[in-house]
Amino acid sequence: MDTAGTAFSFTKPDASPERREFYARLCEKNITPLWEVLGKLLHPSPVPQMVPVMWRYGEVRPYLMDAGRLLTEREAERRVLVLENPGMRGQSRITPTLYAGLQMILPGETARSHRHAASAFRMVVEGTGAYTAVEGERTTMHPGDFILTPPWTYHDHGNPTESPVVWLDGLDVPLVNMFDTGFAEHHPEDLQPHTIAEGDALARYGANMLPVDYTPERLSSPVFNYPYARSRETLEQLRRSGPLHGCHGLKMRYINPATGGSPLPTMGAFLQLLPAGFCGEPYRSTDATVYYVVEGEGRSRVEDASFAWGARDIFAVPSWSPVSHEAQSDAVLFSFSDRPAQQALGLWREQAPLRA
Ligand code: GTQ
Figure 1 (cartoon, rainbow, N blue to C red):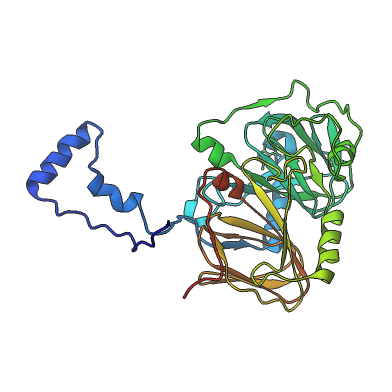
Figure 2: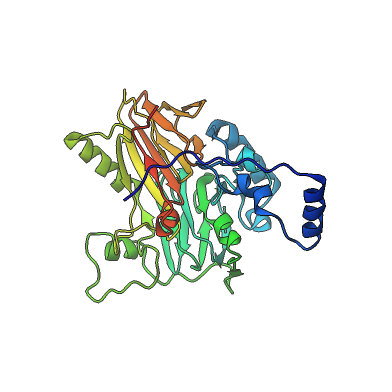
């Protein structure tokens, strides 16, 4: 049985001259007394360095265009502006475990083929008709599409259209590097050969059927494009049947159709509809979460911060911070976090309703 505890607190013992002299001797040997650091190691609840933050797309877009003038895609490998959490500058982190950036690719450009141990996905922000190729298959990008590049799969991007294309990249690089498990390599050719017809993966694995002898080759989803048109239609259909969740509105999670688990081993992704006038209750969970506004206008309160958002804006919510959403117009929020990693390790918690 679970016995309710009292809040953890710890006061350092006084440091007498004799104790200090002892600590100095320990220090020389790379040893620290636990009672000097315990308060930093154990807390009654999470103490994130991460802070709530929002980026308005209208403010970032001009910088993407500047980057387009100043560097070629080839020089940059990927032309990405990394969204850094103000509580963790210089670490390429938007949350403690996740990386996010806005990638821009100009007409006629390609981003060379490579692969890495980190998982990645794209959420398409602007422009229709660019492509991502993954392990021999291309998929055409449309705004709102959720596109995977599973760990150690070759991927390249191209923009054969007449306009710049922008997407949000999410990667688990900080988590992979914390484990010191990061590897990366280029494909021997600039662009990998396209050996599989476009649409193959979605038809084969994404239509509520699987090939009769299918056995999963990897932990990630065999579907690598989750088209927005389909996901949006699902939300539209479901709002007619209801009911709405008091905190989330109508919230769905993206899945690996072969397992029902998350699309990528470490990252979960979600899509939620907040109907016009929705005024949600506060909710919190231990997975720090990044939100991207696909459609609509509204406001989210995160602790003391209040983010008034519109389409294409991005905001981030730290672990265990209460968040509540309101929608002025019908709104669709995409979000992602390391929830599957926390769940696999037995660490994930959520709370709603919140006690005072
Ligand atoms: O598109 O492969 O934002 O490798 C960072 C690293 C995107 C990519 C990023 C990458 C990519």
